[in-house]
Length: 139
Image (cartoon, rainbow, N blue to C red; front, side, top):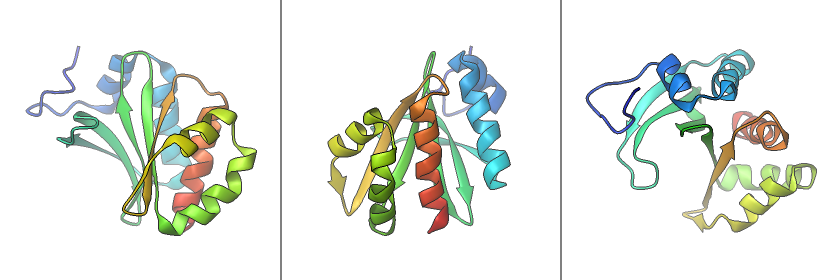
């Protein structure tokens, strides 16, 4: 088993998938790569929110989303900045009540909302994350 807190050893995406133990993690990664023609970048975060190894998906220098592996599920973080706020709020009525709640409860700081979304299946929240990524990609 890998240690996501061990800065000295970068895990592979497959090791992260095994750590999560939920096939949705690797399915999400594959879908991101196919939809947006971007590669994952595994990075170590020393930030106090989610310290440890994570997976970033970037396109044209912009981070589309960041994944934080957990046992049995993973967190997807999508940052909604000033430019994305209007388009993101325009799609919110068509999103799940769970995502609407996450959006409403997330504090804004420096003109950004850092949405942390727990994913464990390919249900409504999974689709909502891709809708938010579309907003990020489009701007």
